[in-house]
Length: 99
Image (cartoon, rainbow, N blue to C red; front, side, top):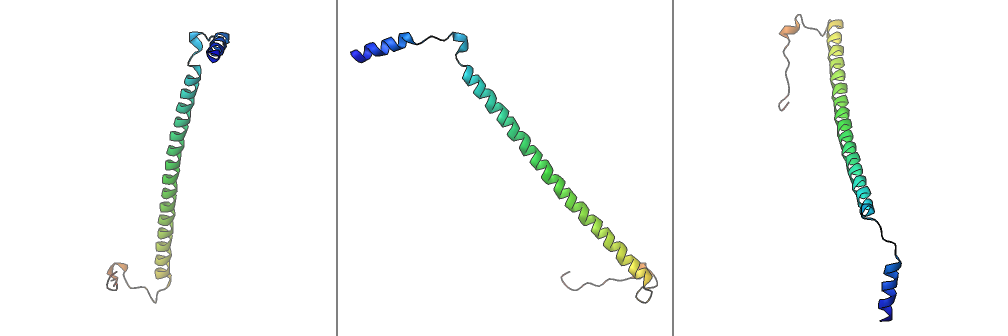
């Protein structure tokens, strides 16, 4: 019984909050969750774009080196007349089996 009176007194002594202030913390938490979610989505998109850009860079480097190799091979064929055929269109390439 003494405990009940103490609880009632403590309850009466607590100041009451106006109705407008109730739920303010949940709005702040909701806003924070939305902002953090948007940041996560933005970071995921940027990561995907960076990976796609890096893959394109690698493909570009491979294409450049392949073109450079072809030019070097052609220039060696032209500059070394002993190994060059009379007409490049008549050149027959033979590959080993499985190639």
